[in-house]
Length: 140
Image (cartoon, rainbow, N blue to C red; front, side):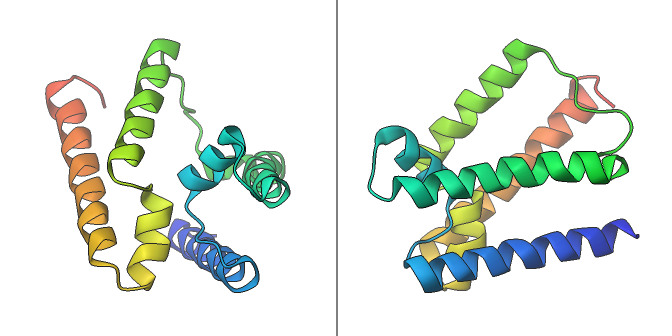
């Protein structure tokens, strides 16, 4: 299947899941808020746990059923780099009062100006980082 079709299907499923969570739970599907509430002991622990386990389980299931979707080279990086990246992402989501899923998927669909500003910042920072790493950092 063409990568564009796979990405389109994945995006549609994310949108559908976010819609169902909002309709049936009255909650926005921001992953950082859901995971943070799970760790921080917020109300709704069972649905938060189901959401996180569903994301992880879905990825593992896809890895087993269609390993080629993930590419052949894999993502082998230094543990220090991964921890540093995770801490930066966590810090950024706190600064932005949400993550890319909360702002980019749910906030934009609700017409939030704050989410538009956050999503533009996420995308510009990501594009700038890729440029710096690929062209100045020696990575492929």
